[in-house]
Image (cartoon, rainbow, N blue to C red; front, top):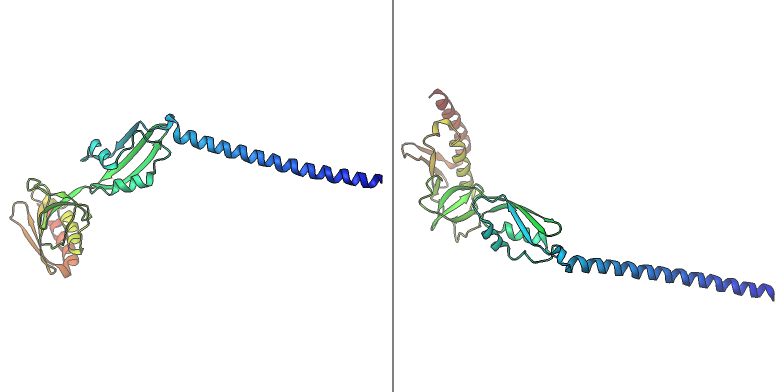
Length: 238
């Protein structure tokens, strides 16, 4: 009978050890979960992580007030609960914003760095618009913005601020304006008007209206390169 009693005691000890081990693990798991929950509650509810300032860098035309109004309420919100990807997406939806990066500055700050679009030309549609070098409409244009070249003769249906209206003829026209105006011969009298008569003909005009350049669209690239080469030589000889 003694061996049987020893076997029973041994089994009881093994079961007790197993139960104790499982209970210890359960207690440890509960403690970890509670610690994680407490940390999360502290991080998301503590006034220590309430945003009190938002700094914006990189803007030239837009003001801090305009940008903060566009972004929406940030101050007073919890820094961990802000969804930076959605805020970035909201910012780049602004017609004047080309790109943006945003990050948290612990414990209470948000830092936004952006790059604005650069006004490159005016385009006459049903109204006059300002657009950048990618063909994005930035705002309604003003006749007083005389330093920007003007593109006319383009037909775009239902243009909207922020939309990209750049067809091939517009992109080619923008590239040619830029390249022409890099030449010394146009330093004092830059190209400031591009009229796209049709898909086969483009007319460039200088600010003083004393030089006109006619180009056929289908041979524009080759003809343009030859013309730029010739004008470069003329500019050097002047």
